Image 1: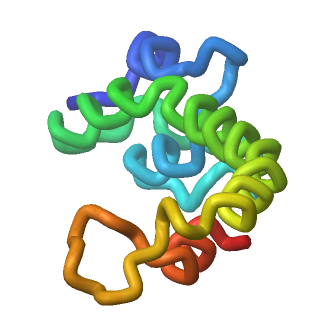
Image 2: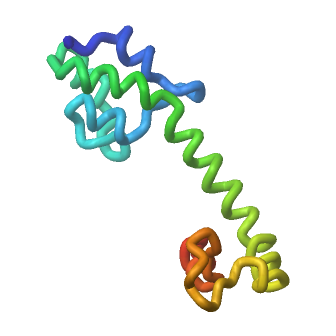
Image 3: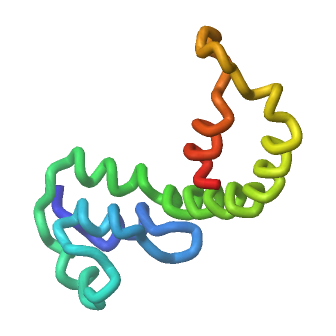
Length: 111
């Protein structure tokens, strides 16, 4: 598929930008230090699958940042809950696969 301005607009986020992953799909290294990337990609031929993925990734980077922000703001509350309720999450015997060990949970959450 030939990259057009129309394709770029289809993949543009609701905030008017593109993610690094999207720009790499178009054959450019990214947007950080590559100010002319849009001009460089128009007219370039890329696989149809890459063009489809480019559009699918629209706003994906915004959703990921929002989730990270929510988790970061909740870490203090989660840490307190774990410390107050260790008996709920702790499986000393290791026999119950549906129960998470407290240390594993803390490690997973990065707290």
